[in-house]
Amino acid sequence: MTEVRERKRGQGGGRGLSADDWIELGYAVLAEEGLNQVKIDSLCRRMGVTKGSFYWHFTDIAAYRQALVERWGEWSDEEHKKFESLDGLPPRERLLGLIAQLTSPRHWMIERAMREWARTDPQARASIRRSDRRARDAVRRCLVDHGLDEQTASMRAAWIFAMGVGALHLSDSEEDRAGAGRHSAELVDLMLRTD
Amino acid sequence: MTEVRERKRGQGGGRGLSADDWIELGYAVLAEEGLNQVKIDSLCRRMGVTKGSFYWHFTDIAAYRQALVERWGEWSDEEHKKFESLDGLPPRERLLGLIAQLTSPRHWMIERAMREWARTDPQARASIRRSDRRARDAVRRCLVDHGLDEQTASMRAAWIFAMGVGALHLSDSEEDRAGAGRHSAELVDLMLRTD
DNA sequence: ACCTGAACACCGTTCAAGT
DNA sequence: ACCTGAACACCGTTCAAGT
Image (cartoon, rainbow over all chains, first blue to last red; front, top):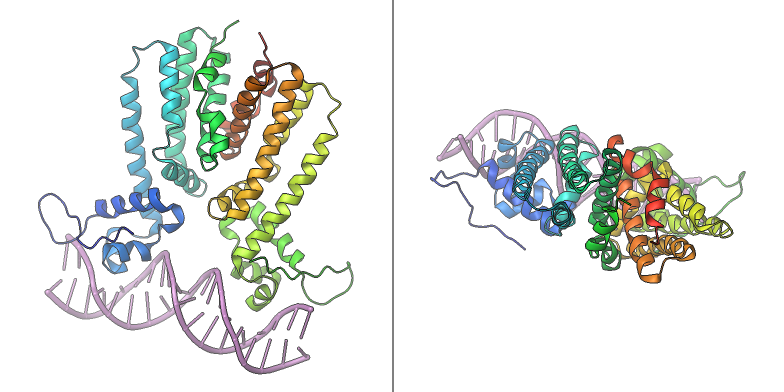
């Protein structure tokens, strides 16, 4: 579909491709067609080069995946920073925003691919774990700020987080998502109860 | 697609393999080494036969996966029937049992494989959806029997179910599972609140 | 009925050779 | 520095031929 004939190149010039070009393409394919379409062969076809080109930029496909994982990690860092700017909001609104972000459909394919890779690649696992812990901590902080004790907050944060990951994987069937993705206000109200 | 010419035989007789033998092996490999190790080539090596044997029992690897999916569906049906026998228990205990079953570590690999296949294979998707709906309904019934109104029960059932699926996918990192898998009593108590 | 053996296509990987 | 082209291994698939 996305037949790239005209190669994108760095700002200045240079006739060849950069590692970044490959990563960019990888993400596009990942998001559009999923993990199983990220093959060296088809990537090269899209790029209009032979496989030797790919292997000049990356030692093997594991290194390529790792580059994608690293890029994802950086991107995840930025997202988190963006969210920290909402620290002024009351806990309930902050939590609603967090949940919206957690269950956002923006990058399902990519998130799923990361979790898939994390199952075999230790580096990917470390990256995901770091990102997950940050998300869970952010949720927990909302709960603590709202007045829950540390223990209860940790428990409920883990539940909410697991729910988010579940919604991520259920995102294919609309009926399943309905309950988990919508009604976040009701969920938050239940999770914030202190009585 | 469903070209499964199977031939069951007793324990003793028959020199050749049956489709069941292949399915059995597939499950073993799936559970032990995960989805990516279910290759025709390596399965044949384990069986001690050539690939022609595999292709006599199944038209292609899609048909084989479908046979695995069907088998999983039957097995899932049985599990559900087993659980219906607990209908006499009070809702709270029933719900605890359901959650224990939903987040049981027994067949993580297999469940994940099914959800993975469901992403591309419509038959697998139908199978999973059917099983999911049953599980969610069972949870919802516990909540209704405990006194929640239909709307609230549906919402909370979807949450609990999503949490279970999330726990399934987080099952690699122990820290994440800790909150979602353990503390089910606290979760149930929160979810059963009517006030 | 059940399988072998050889063939082919596809994809990951390597590497000498080109510009 | 960046890529081509040919080679090879691995795996999915087909099929004529064997028992």
